[in-house]
Amino acid sequence: MTSYNDIDDELKRLKEAVLYPENPSDSSTYEESLKSGTQSLQESIKVLEDLCSDLRSKCQMSMSKATVSHDKAQTALIEQDMASVFQHSIDKQVHIRLVQALKTRIEQVETAKVSLEKHLGKLKALLKYS
Image (cartoon, rainbow, N blue to C red):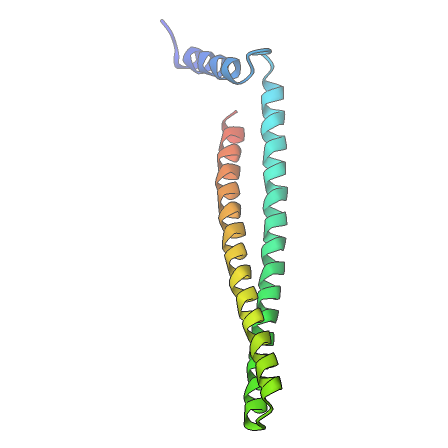
């Protein structure tokens, strides 16, 4: 009669044979690959977190500059300095467009980060059960 342990052992051998057909009995290679993949994903997630932080600070800076340009344009309008109104209005629009581009990029980076975190969770689960 076949026991549950025999079935578990056979499933483990099958898993190793599928994942590493050239060396089905070497489970240490499998675990090392999982650990290496986990570490790489953790490092990538950290890089993306740092990038998001940097993009957010640049976005905040551009929003502040857009506000300053708006205020300067208002002051120039009161003083009827149309050249300054024009220049500050252009500056404001440039900063607004930069903010929009940065927000789009932040969303893309955050989406990539979430995806990597999901994959990291799957790798950790595989490592836990290997």
